[in-house]
Length: 252
Image (cartoon, rainbow, N blue to C red):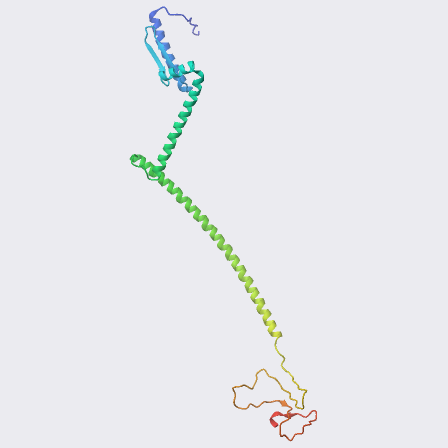
């Protein structure tokens, strides 16, 4: 059987009334606390017993809650603006606190304003600096390795280009040498040259040679071997020589 419905009316028995007041009061205070915690609400509870004894609960303080209640009841418009202003002021104060904390942290990382810090805080700061230094060195090493790899790749590329240019230059030099040899072979003079003179009776036939026997520095006469047709002075040979007559040079 379930519990029956209790009729809401004043309890006539004084002892039962006091017991019920104590139980319901404790339950009400507990529910007010749970409401403020679970729902993040601002709760204020004021209880006066039949004897005039005060019982109260305030999640943010009874006085603050009552002032807020008065503002909401008597100045509803101004209360909205004031609440918004208060929220902005709270936000500004939070941002100021964060800004000051960041500035203080930056000074500590730079090694400034270390006097107020304790030993534990200094140890924590030292660990942070060591971690940052290790990451910086790791990044620097990685960048240097990437640059070295890029320089090696450029070196290999330039080496290949140098080899190709050397090969082209050698081919052009060999082609030029071959062309010069062919031109020198084509420009060689003939082995025999014949010179004749038509203005006079004296006709001389010379046989050229590659090695000239006469030189300017020689003082001794040189005997020239060969066939010549010469008319000397005071010679008894007649001026008119029949065709086919050959006189040796050493016999003159």
